[in-house]
Structures are given as C-alpha cells and as structure tokens.
Length: 458
Image (cartoon, rainbow, N blue to C red; front, top):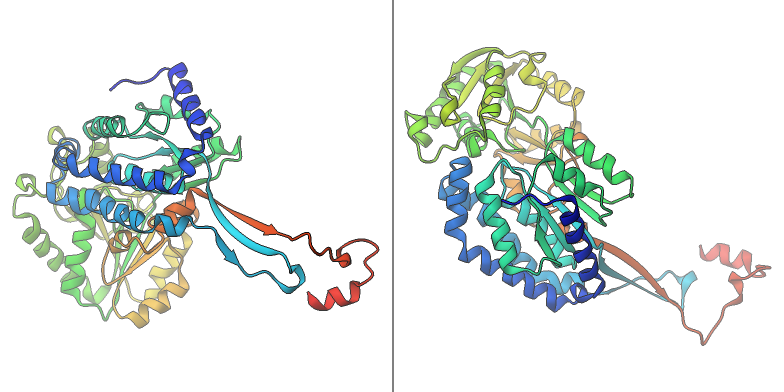
C-alpha cells in the first residue's frame, strides 16, 4: 500500500474540492447511480472481502457476512430505496404571523467529508458512513486503519475501480497521515475509534469549526436481574462478547449479576462457549484472533485482576487469547477502569441492583446498556441510566436495525448514524422562507403601528 506524501494528499483534497464545485453530486439520480455501483462492487468482491477479513482478523466467512458485509448491504439497500424521498424539498407549516410567506426545508450536502475508520470492523465501519456521504451528495476521502492491511488494500482497489478519485478516494497511512489530513479544511468529519483519539480529532476540527460524528466506545455494562432466564442470558452474553473475539465497541464489557445467580450463570456461560466453539477454541474456525501482539500483551496484563474462573490461555505468535471469565473482580481493579476490547469478561455481583446502577452512573456514559430480565424492570433501569443504545434480553442487536439511530453519548460518542440518520449526518438542513411581492404588510416596519395586534398573533 502506498502512503501518500503531504503534496499528494493536498492534490487529492484539491481534486475533490473541484469535483464538488461542479454540483453534479447534488443530482439525486447521480447519487442513486453511485449507490448502485457500490452495491455491485461489494457483491462482485464478496469472496475477496471474506478472505481479507480472515487474513487480518481470522473472521470466518459467516461472521464476516453477519457483522460486516450483510450490515452494509442491508443499509445500502435501504438508502437505494429511500434516497429520492429523503432528498425531496419539503413544505413545512408557516405560522399565521409570517403568512402569506411559504416555508420549505431542503437537504444539501455538507461538502467534502473525511471518514476515518478503525480496524475491528474495517469493512463495515468504512462503508457504512460512506453510504451517508453518497446519499447526501458529499465527496469523501476514506482513511482505513493500517492495522488490517489486507482489507484496507482491497477496499482501496474497490473504490479506485468504482469511483472517480475526485469524488471518492482512499488514502492509506498511520497517525502521520491522519495528522496531515486533519490539517485540511474538511466540511465534515466522521471518526470511529477510541475516546482518546476522538478528543484529538475534535481538537483538530475545532480549528475550522468542522461538524463531525464521533463513534467512540467505553465500558458497556450488562446487568442480569433476579428474574432473568439464566440459560438464555448466558448464551446471549457469551455470543455478544465473543463476536470478533470481544473486539467490538458495543460488546458487553462486564457483567453484574445477583449474587444468588452467579454460580449458575458461570456454569451456563462455559457450557455455551464450548457449544459454540468446541473444546479447543484455538482450533475453531469460528473464533477470531486479536489484531496484533501489542493488543495481546495488553489483554494478558488485564488477566491478573480477580481470579480466572475459566480460560486464560494465550498464544502470542498466533494472536490467540481464549475466552476468559474473571471472577471476584472489584470495581477498582484496572480491568474495570478501561474498555477491555477483547475476550475477557469480568463478573461482579450485587445484593441490591442499585449498587450496580450506582457504579454505572459514577463512570462515563456507555455506548450500550444491556439488561437481562423483565421489560418492566428494564424500563425502570433505563430511567436511572443513560447510554447510546439499549438491548433488553439480548446483546449487540440494536446496531443491525437501520431504522434505529446508532451512536454514543458523552464520552462514548457524538451524534448518530445508520439508515436515514446517516443521510442527515452528512446533510445541511436548509430552511427557506419565500415571501410574495403582491402584498407588503407594514406591521413589521418601524414605527410598528400595529404592535399590540402583532403581539396577540405571537
């Protein structure tokens, strides 16, 4: 993969500014055509995408489709079906005191956008935001993560073969490339990654007052209530935790369970782990790998907290860490102070659920909140907490519904996307008031003769 020089990055940026100035991206038929082209190139390269994700993260073709390709295609079809409707200028109500004027709202592209994606879902998290850029009429520079080089190289090839580089282009590189890109004056920035880097992106954007979406992360809590179906809870928590070997921004980060249910929950978790992946996790074709050796070392260091109830095997050369359940973990332990981003699952217990709620509220607002138990109790707990999204009696599923906005709150993110929300994220909602000239009402002019009457209208 070629890393561009500062001059080459500047050239791509200027190319896109010129392309945007032609206004052809504002044509809805143009946007629809580009969305369909993107769908075609994804379908044509599906096998290659699966191979690249296997090479980078050992994702099975099944997991690659369910968590990356399928999610993008599903949202892409939604954009193709609805972009004409979303893009129409709409009449809105005009208050009596503004009549006979008429009011409309139109959506126009924010302009030249920068999309920076992470390594954990490298295909999904580059192309999902791109749907919003295309459907809204923006140009886009895409910056994939260098940590997953096989899929990054393939995505660059797909984009280069499908789109004019003045319209959509991929730029490869690491931190230095990000720094150079952020020096340019983009009209919109979309970043997915850690809260630490999100703050850097936000500071850089502040120099130009650039609007943005920040999709970050955090410690997404999972609460198991006394009334929960423990077998189902164990199965679904383990499923949500071990997808992508726990390298998921909305993975259940830790579990709080009533003390009377802990032993049963732990037994069921181990049972379902083995049922999903077999006795030897390292030999399972469905169990992914950690992204690199540094990440393996970081996770290995977190295993010293609490006691290992199950798992704990590490093979650095294979970037393998077995699913690991940690018991007797304390709130103050290091593993409870940072997002885990791996297949380690701390278990904490409560006597009174308010203890768990207190801990959640003392810390940063999470990207997701999971509760296993009754709907009534879940509604009660949602009133007491805040998070980007919620699943009741399941995990992760809210990300797959393109009718729901997806995003964080506070430290876990800024603004939303998916489905129509992606279109809106990359759009400027422009309000228009059109006033006729056949009548010119005098009450708005000094010396305001009809002021008492106008006050009543307001």
